[in-house]
Every structure is written in structure tokens, then in C-alpha cells.
Length: 102
Image 1 (cartoon, rainbow, N blue to C red):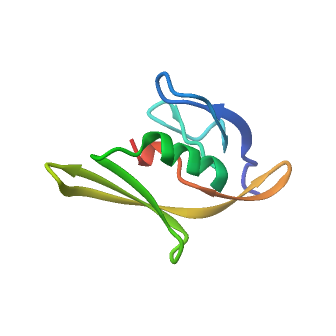
Image 2 (tube, one colour; image 1 turned 180 degrees about the vertical axis):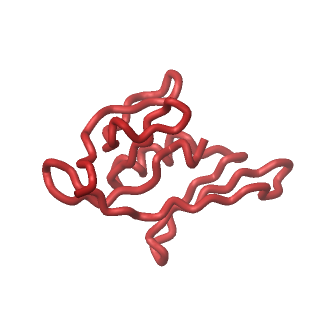
Image 3 (spheres, one colour; image 1 turned 30 degrees about the horizontal axis):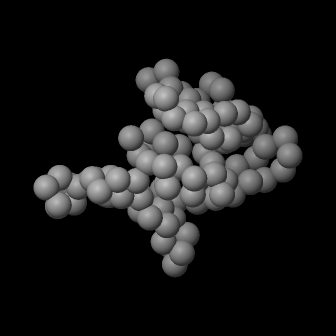
């Protein structure tokens, strides 16, 4: 059986904290890899989208599309797809761990 994702709070730099889920042992270069429910993902999107880093939700594909722009041109596109994880409070629909985005 896959490990249960634990609830915790995450931030980047001096940002506010965001409630999410992660597996403590799953890290990327020492960083946690959290996932967020949609309402929290939307807060994250609203707080981190800029003219040069655009994040939008696509309701048709049920994913977030993240575009990095340089001089008005898209130089990188990432897609954060929905994932269903197991937690001690049951299954949760979540999106991206933010290291995919930063």
C-alpha cells in the first residue's frame, strides 16, 4: 500500500503558508513535494502569477497550465494535472507540488 500523504503547511520564502499534503520521505533536493486541494491551489495561483509567470486553470482538461515568458514569448510550459492521493481522512483531489512551478 502506498504511503498516506500527511497534512502540513508550506511556504516559499516569505510567502504566506498554504495547507497541503505530502509524504515526508518524498523529497526533491531536500525540498518537500506538497500537493494542494483546488481552493488552496487557487490561492497559490493568485499570489504567484505574474506577467512573466502565468498560471491558469483549464476546466476542460482539469489541470493548471503554467507558462514562463521572456520578452513576451513563452519559453517554457508545464502542466499540473489533478491527482488523487490517500490521506488519513480519505482520498483527496489535489494538484501540483509547487517545485514543478518555481
